[in-house]
Image (tube, rainbow, N blue to C red):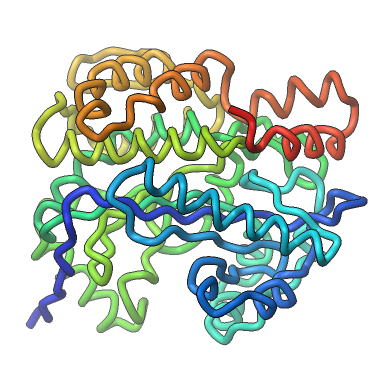
Length: 370
């Protein structure tokens, strides 16, 4: 018998954001294992807002539940500013990127948490190589069935979000040839990557119960898909994105995610359901080529550039952005499309600046730039 899973009803379209930052040594710009010291120094009111992650060279910054992306922006800005001041006391700094371009996974230290230790014991070298950082965006919904409707239909748009956010082209000093190599490292994990359609909340409950009863997971958050329902929070969680290099780009990406969720749940945008094989092909194109990847629309038998599909999607969502008071993010999104994702800027700047350390320094100085 399937055990019912309760979906905590949320206020529609609230926003919660999680950003995983790298901790870097101020002199070498390499990954710096200072998370234990930083976390232990935090005041009580920030213990749930700045949290440890898998390795000691990263921390996660969370917002509270916010009514809008504008509110989340103010919230996140305050916490990141505090983190910047704190890290400086430990001779390190934060860096917004989804894969450090030259530090080795072999040098990283696991955060001392029993759950992480258990995960690493199972994952072995795949887990050791997982020194990646991601952007996770939660959007509140009023029911599990609505969450599944969004889940099923949002999957077709996820490759566009990955292409726009791509920021992980280098691994241990070498160009991988990918716009987002983080996504390929993450795909190696069990219960990760692009999920198939679920169609109903009952189907989701049946799947979670099957995985729990077989001892594959202990709880729903042990499923690491690119998008997943989070029943304990009452949200749909979008997890596919790399982390763009600038704060305003992070916020614009979250505004796009919120607008997509609103449009899907209210039937305000044309949907194009796709076979999982087509979605996976589009995701590969996004990970490999970024905005220059090919997006296949199986409903219209068309191939289009990822960037042209994004522009078309953003234009269709403009009324939703207006309703959400998020129109200020549209020019940011279009500028990101015009200039290319962070992965492209990494490569162009390396040609000019000569060393990856110089590129990191440049990106850090521009994080708050409009």
